[in-house]
Length: 160
Image (cartoon, rainbow, N blue to C red):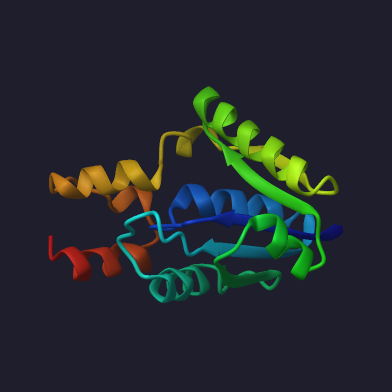
């Protein structure tokens, strides 16, 4: 087991794809901070408090996960939490291009930061929060992409 790491993201909503990365990372790392971004530039389905609450609920069976919200640069957050390792999930080549750009800017801002990529499990590689939101707009079935707690919260919020 190694260090503590940060898995940053908006997690709006947290999906089975996110949980796959969390689960696999939890076998490799001693402590994982699930860092929920309060990005004021993004219109989110759930408030920061709702996203934190949902993330805590769906990760409650892990004993090495801590869920925290943040609203600063991830490099600043990492320094505050005394870690220099970020983990990101990669579903596709386009994800890699975007994540590489983020990893490089983070490295520029804080040279000690390292970003590790975990490839999504094949059966979950097509799931993204933004695609789920699009399916919701057209009243599609999202039940196979989400933990049941998150699905219930979405159904309450959208009254599908």
